[in-house]
Length: 296
Image 1 (cartoon, one colour):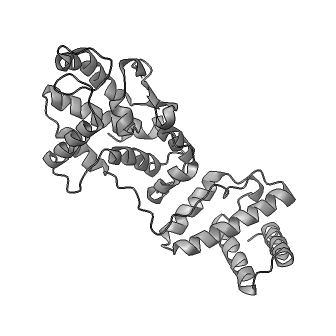
Image 2: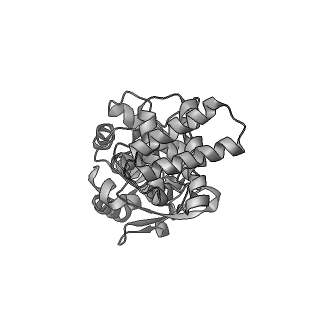
Image 3: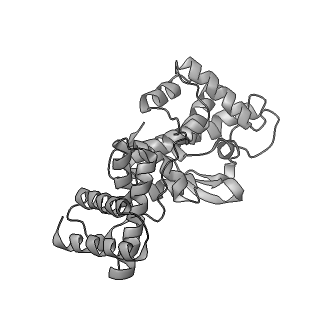
């Protein structure tokens, strides 16, 4: 640890000693936890640490398989330390302010591997419904949609030239979603050729329709996905939200920025998106078009 960081740490510990009534063990734990962080990021400018730094460190703690209570203690110590750095040395931000440690009872999201996803999509046949299924499964994955958002899409929501989708999410909040170039032809074929065949005598603007031409329901989507997963030979039970989980997981695993993923998923709080960081293997640095485009 360099002399300047050692000075920061000693002054922080001295302040804790004066202002807190904690035990000597608490002071020792503060010193140990912060020293561990400073050694992990040896040479970093503590006054200009950003949030990706904090998430990178949190990922490292999870990979050490520490107890959640231990990780929570370390995060709490670092949150206090950077608050001290902001107040006394003008640090630009406290990168641990929005960090929440996973509860031991919190279930991690189940997702499909890239191979499982490919197997699912390739198992769809070339019938009208088979092509519809592949498109809606792939679009839900490519755009990170909820099943309600996918079946709720209307013709006006898809801007094919820009590869942009206007999504109405929870609480009627709108966001923009995207899809990769290889989906463009499939969407065009479905809208111009396949959907008219399914519509029969029906008249409405919903994108995805069932065999009777009526808007597809979430239950209908779930049934089609479960049936296709069995055909594909997938061993785990597949539900629609797993496609959204897979979207977030694959993006982070390829290095996408957590705040970008938060925006693409339509999460209000970063802590909601944080649950996916357990699978991130690279420093968060790339954005959507540089990652998702290469997965399929």
